[in-house]
Length: 328
Image (cartoon, rainbow, N blue to C red; front, side, top):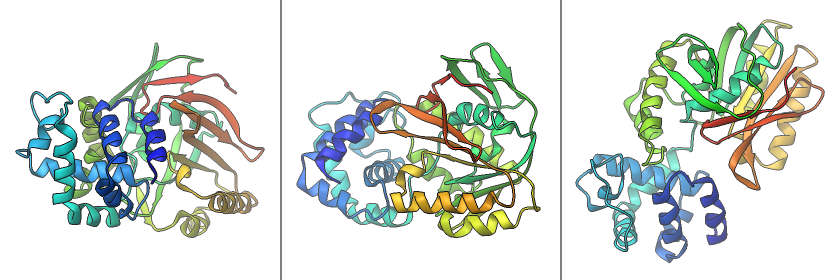
């Protein structure tokens, strides 16, 4: 990862002044860049910050932890000592960071993205379907019908978890849906009931986001109570078999959020071919929430029923607002 790529990354991290500052520290330090380059799994800077965060949570007395709002009652403000403390901690824990970087991935931990995904699922027009997610992490979005929602004045659902967002465009049109099998595809599926997996997902959160942490903990509990099947491995290898395992002719919603940006062009083309082949045997609707290269504040929400992708709106990366502008 180059210093230029790190600078570009900071546009997507504006919710974390701590990480924006530390990204600049990394970009200007040859030793920290070396540690970053040794991280095997992408995106390396997210994994580096997550690894440091998880290790610090085990050592809350370390001086660096004083700068993390979620690890102390009153965080120390960003100052000239922060970069040196971060550098020291990273170099002291270089082996542990490398091990985490070889075994962990950046995975979905923001359940509030469901405020965009569920309206897009409704737009498919399907009343009963199987739900398959590429990059499912711990299955938080596969339980998207198990949460309560509020889009401005529009409310839907009954759950101990409320997902609330600002509605900037057209209001969603809630309707009942029946989800058959819920299947998550992931290189490294996480167990919502496993303490280590939960700790990793929490470590990936920005340190300045206590409300996201509480939301994640409740969502993990709901996901653990939901009948979700997790399939490990490369989605390009597992998807055909998963689709073939479903009852013939029954419709599928294939969903992803902040996953496909990690695919190469060749992988994206291969995925399109797999979906096209599956559509000869059953309806397959796709729902995607993903990175917009030139917009650090918004993600694109799109659907495809087989007639081509249609952009239906934008959402803030962590679901803070939703701007729908196309409804069926």
